[in-house]
Image (tube, rainbow, N blue to C red; front, top):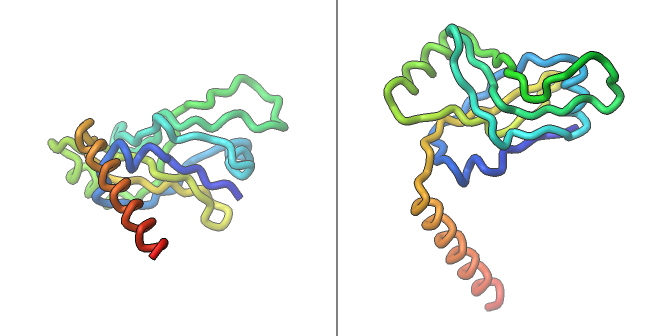
Length: 146
């Protein structure tokens, strides 16, 4: 059972809130995800006509599918109820926030997408995070050796 993670998300954004949405996929796309193939590297979520879409997620063509032309990066609809969508729109409106897909995972037979409400980090914030992590690693190493 594959789970597709967005490894860059925590580095590029400071995530303040998360929520889970269903994803509208074709059968072949679900099979591809079960194989553990796919990428959320440059993906994001956006509102179109009052609905939420996952844009830029790369789900390659299923290995045993030889059908018509296939667009691996097509926009896929995300399923939330209208109250949740309204709340999200109000939360993001006018603020410098983005909806970042953190992971695609299976819940039973359904594919779900965990979204994070995040603010893009600046370059110096990323450097500070790296320094902090290095210091914590050094402390942990010192404590292990004693």
